[in-house]
Image (cartoon, rainbow, N blue to C red; front, side, top):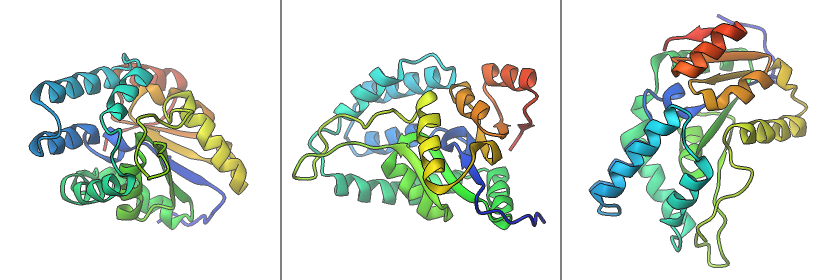
Length: 223
C-alpha cells in the first residue's frame, strides 16, 4: 500500500485507450448509429478519424469542428443526460484493470485524480462521477441564450499543447506544481503533457509514443 499522503499532487489521466481499453468516440458513434442520428457513411468516417487520431495524423481542429457542427441546435442538458445514460450502459465497464489499480493507488496516497481528455465535457463529467474522480479537464461547447449548442468548441482545444495549457491553469489555481504530478497516456499527441509533468507514465503506447518513451526513459505500463 502507498502511504505518502499528498493532496497537492495530482495524477492526470487520459481517457481513451488509457483508462478505457478502447476509444469512447467509437462507442458513441455506435450509439448514434443505432439511434438513427448518423448514417453508416458517417459512422465509417468516425472510424477513419479515430484511426488517424491514434496514429497522430489528423487535423484535430477540422475534425472537431465538423463533429460539433452535427449537434448545433441541441439542448446542452439533453445531450448531457443522453451521454450520462450511454456512459453507464456502454462505457463504464471498459475501465482497464490496471487503470482501476492506478486510480486506487493514487487515491490512497491522497493525490487528486484529474481526467485530462480531448473527449467532450459530457463524457468527462460522466467519467468523473462514475469513478469518483476529483476533477476533469476536457472540451466543452458554447451555447446560446436558450442553452442550445451553437456548433463551436471552447479554445484552447484540450488536445496536445492545449492540454498542457489547461493543466497548468488548473494547477496554478490550486497551488499544485506540475513537476510533482503524474500523467498517464497512450498517445503521442500527449507528449507535450508527458514532458510537462515530473512523473510521466506511458500506457500501452502507440508506436511513436513508444519510441519517445524509450528515448526519454519514461516508464511504459501494459494495462
